Length: 383
Image (tube, rainbow, N blue to C red; front, side, top):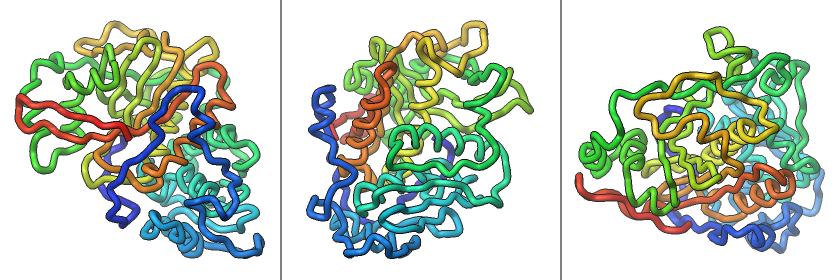
C-alpha cells in the first residue's frame, strides 16, 4: 500500500463481494470466462455491430455502464490516463499525472482498466503505452516493469507499446536488490490491547487495521499463517541499497501484510471501509510479481546480506524459501470490478498458463466483523 486518501472510483451502492471461492487448481478453468466472450455472455456490454467505432474515456465509460452492476463506474480523466481506440484494439496511454499517482488510484491502474475493457466491453486487444512527454524516473521505471509482467500474462490480448528506454529492473547489468524492513523497538504483542482498541473505533485507519491484524489470532487462523508481519517494503535498487541507486519508488511503497503458510508466501492488500479502489488489482499484481522475482532458483531480485532484524517476525530467508504466492485483496467491501469474479478468475487462469513454477494465485476475502473493544478480534467470510 502507498499512502493515499480513501475513496472509490465507482459510485454504485452495491456492497456485494462475491468471488471465486473454490481455490483448487482443478477449478481454475471452471471459474474463468474467456476474454473473447460474445455479447450474449452475462456481464458483457451489448455491442454495436461495427468494431471500427472510435471511443474515448467517456464512450468507454458508457459501454462499461451498460453492464448492470457497473452502471455507476467511471473511468479516470483523459488528462490522467487516456483510453481510446476501437473494439478491435483499444488503447491505454499513461499520462504524466496518472503515472505519478499512487498505484491504487484510478489514474494509475492501467491493468485493471485493461481487464475491464477485455472482459466487459468486447475488446479484442489492448495496446498500452506511455505519453511521449512523460519524464523518466522511479514511477516510470515501475510502470515499465508492470507493463512487461502484465503483457506476458496476456500475450495475444495485451500489446505493450515500448518506449526507447529499456526497463532497468529487467535489463540491469548489475545486481538488483530489494530493501528490507528496519528493526522495531518492541514485539507486536506488547501493544496487543492498544492495537485492538484502535481498530474498534468508528473510523479506523488502514495503518491501525494493519497493526491489529498483525497480532490477530483470528487472522492467523483464517489464512493458516505461521508468521505474520506488516509493511514489507518493495523498493528496488541497482547495485546496492543506497540513495541514487533507486529503480522503483521506495519510501512509502510496501505490502500491507505478509504471511508464511508452509511454502506459500501470502500477500495482503488491505482496504478500510469506504476505500473501494479498483487499483487494488494493480497493487496486488505488482507486489506478487516482485515477490515472485525474488524467490526460487530463477530469482532476479536479491536481498543484501544483513544482520537479524529485531522484533520482525519474517526475514528474507522466510521469503526466499517459499515456492508459491497467494495474493489476497482484503476489505469489508470491494469495487464491483473486483467483487465480480471474472477479473481474478482471468488473472488466475493466465497465471496458471504462464507459470509452471513459483505459481501465483489471487483471491478476495471479506472482513465481516471488526473488534468491538480491546479484547475483541476480527471475523472473516469467503468472498
